[in-house]
Image 1 (tube, rainbow, N blue to C red):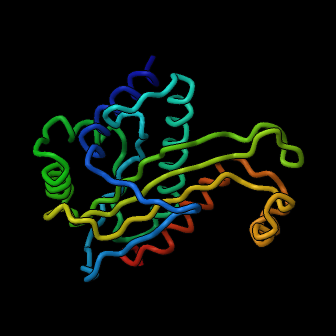
Image 2: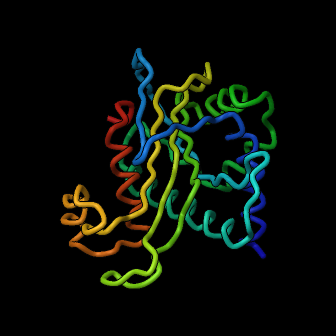
Image 3: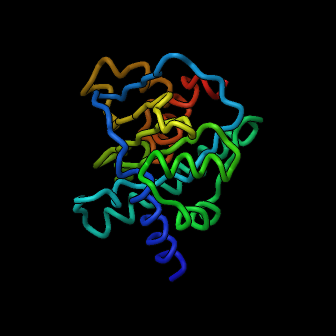
Length: 213
């Protein structure tokens, strides 16, 4: 019951936070930095949300649960990767839920209010759009793991996008795509789990964000 309540609560938060976020296209993901690079003293990192809460999104309940699992996994990985960064402020789901009901004014107003309340001049948002687990074993998979997420860093006072990146991958076998040899080799020629694929994608994208250096 508590898990369902948390899902509903975070989905409501996501309606406010992500309704105005756009996505990017590309086969494996894109990254964009908006010049000039403005130094940030503090970046509030929010819990990952799902695309279920977007207006007009139609999705089956099992798929919604899968996305929620993906969001929880992404949140855990991001926290693990960034918790040692002195300029990062990790925001818990309960802290976010307590702040959002007091905020209004669209995406820019929401980001500005969060930045002010948390004393941060940047806010990092993550949306999980797909999280399909591998069906089978690491050596024989009937269906591969598939992950799709979008990250965006906004300046809290203006709401402007400073950096954005997305990651989309459904693992392919070496035989079906000879250009995947390097990835297959790094993965030990095994079928990875969705969590492993998510971790790889998040590490790659965060390492490319100049504001986190």
